[in-house]
Length: 410
Image 1: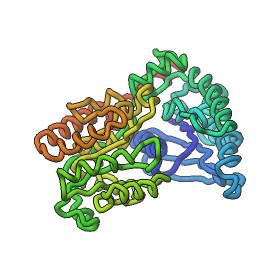
Image 2 (image 1 turned 30 degrees about the vertical axis):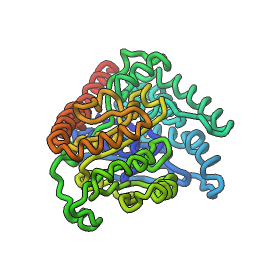
Image 3 (image 1 turned 90 degrees about the vertical axis):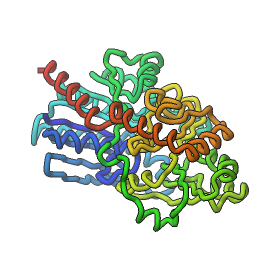
């Protein structure tokens, strides 16, 4: 099958969750014998066409206007999210006309990107079925400047109209399926549950990490791991606020924060103010290939610790949480941070009320002190993720969807 994948961002060395997911889907479709072309508006200065066959991968960069740094977050973002899709459409049509006929289109849906609108236009012009995978459904606009709020609202309404017209919509969780139907009027019959996937061969129990442990000076330490961007909405500060109680019970402890973000200086200042800076280490960003080894170091994994009500409405399935669980690590999250279909309190993780710092301290101490509990929760987590989020399971599901759509279109 020849597949066209239309997305806003793409990288063959991904770091962001949506680009990791896109590359995984593209690579796995190619391994199963399909031919995939990815077209992406990407970032100011380039548009990408990535061609993937079973044994061949090629990236073509197409110049777009460059913008100075002062314009990057404003006009440049607007350009690549909107006007940059005109050359994207033309190149997709050229690929279809001159090289091969596509059989189906997949798009990564985001409420403020026009990738799905472009994909829908191509699906109508080329008379092809369209599968839209939702990455984000609701963007929290609280506190944004008025123009940016308007931009999000207008683009969100436009995108939603075209999402409804997709042949199939892949949603992360039952919660998102419900809200997409009730608030977005997306037909339930067209929606299929498709969580963010995890490679259960790469992320697995028993990964050797002694060299990394020695390099980081963690010999004999109990390790807590918070993995991912240090942004306010993920509330990493709650773990630091819980540390004074935790270290009173567990002296030889280190909390690793792996990732970067604007909260890092404030987190470091908070740790100093609470007198726990000796128990905290900020590792910074690491290559995605190293993430399994960092997870392997951990005795307990933590976060996201979201406080907002939005994830509880649409049932997020964070990639990092699935990766923790695939490595058979006990995870502690807050209610609303992760879909209830993924983390079940007391069975394969701990789910706390938002901002419950005492509860967070108690949950971590309990998991650190009770090896049997920690092992049992970790094993349950691994088994659950293998059934729910394994890429092998998800790609078989996607192939069935694509085959049914192509056959019905013939």
